[in-house]
Image 1 (cartoon, each protein chain N blue to C red):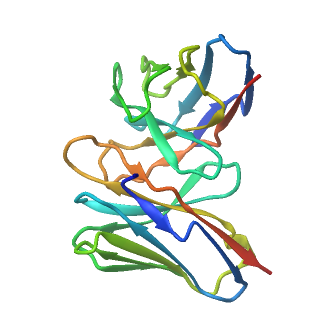
Image 2: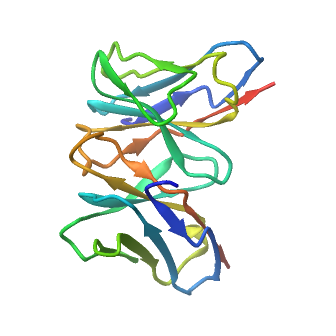
Length: 114
Length: 112
């Protein structure tokens, strides 16, 4: 079953804790992306990676970190430096990262800070 | 403000009616895509239109692009209750940052 998966679906974090969101794809896509979505809002780009062992900051990278050690995996860590992390986080991938590529999205992780 | 901004923010229509959503952007683009999001889910790609195209069709979807006005529209004909979702435009460029820029979305409610 091909696709892109995210886990967990729901995540609760205490203030001051780091948490890591998982994103895995078996589509053999080179490019992967992390977006943040706040209620009733659009998607804002956090980080993206177009090749293994390389990634770039998006528009709202502060307080987040990523790694891309394997082609199929692009985990996102929400650090304690992120002051307002409660949001819906979406991971996406596409074949090469060209602007004409279709992005395929995972089902999302809803993070709540207690 | 964001590169892509949809108008209206929310739209409520009856089943069978047509729904039109608009997207405006600020910088030059190579293409524009439309995506759909059901509540609490990931986005699904609907259609892509390139900067040298003016209109494109896919089933009940019709997309137009006016690069002189930096705007695009998405028309859903003969709407169904299952079309209820949020719709986002996303602009792409082949130079500079190679990532899509998403708008704020239009929430469409189709009443049965």
